[in-house]
Image (cartoon, rainbow, N blue to C red):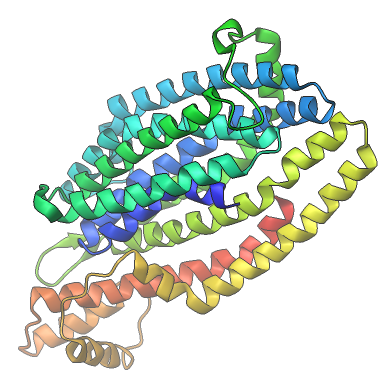
Length: 412
């Protein structure tokens, strides 16, 4: 469980640090992060097959065959990583334009994606190796490796985003660079563990086992359905963020902002962490079922699968409760900047309660009334009021998604 969470935590840590830089960086990294989440789902094409096939060989006592299958799976995983890195580097501008960002968000998002792209490729390779370890029954090695990497990532974020200890203040680009560096360190650590047989399987003989079409078909036969299941939520998220970004808000000072899109990306950031938690908790049954099948024990495999379904429902209920009860507090982790005097913002919210209106334009109708009456709100106050609305919308989004997630976890 911890390995699954830590493996994907770099992007979440970036968003937590970036939450103090303002709405545009938060929104831009949210746009990029949704595409990165989609890329992780595509990697299921190989990792799901690697876990299942290695687990079956291992359960049947065929350790050598398990190692060979792991080597061939790693070849495919590295190939997919190279393709995804090329797509991110070459198509980053076109992909960002899908969201209809403001000019500031576009520039920030493209730079973030291109800087993080090599690190994402390293993370995909590390993810594939970890899947080989999991298939052989080893979930600890990946956990230790990614725990160390995330400590490094947090430290580098602190240095490069804010410019501590004489390092340049790079802002969002610093977050991307920190994640990329830490991802390569993670790949190096897990490769060392693989090379020197610190896990149940070894990298020895890797170059003698290039991809074989027969083995690839086995991987893809298992991986395609898993990828299809894994890709639905991030793909839906990409589409929904693009739609949300079309709902622009005109502030009284003339600025055009993406408040709805910002709220949606913050909600997705919170959901991604929840999905990593559920994926981690549900990761253990997959190799267990495979090993039972490899030993010729289908009844025990079926029993494990049934218990997994019940466990999945419990996870869904737990996450739904967290989203409903603490959704606003969770959303605030990803948007902390609020420089306006609290009493002024509270007064604006109280005035808004007397106006019968709905939708994200409600607060600005209040501001319009104040402006018509001769009152002027400063830019910090407008930004603080906008941030409050973003957090409220993100919380509402989490409530509805949490309720739906109960049934989604059971189906998963």
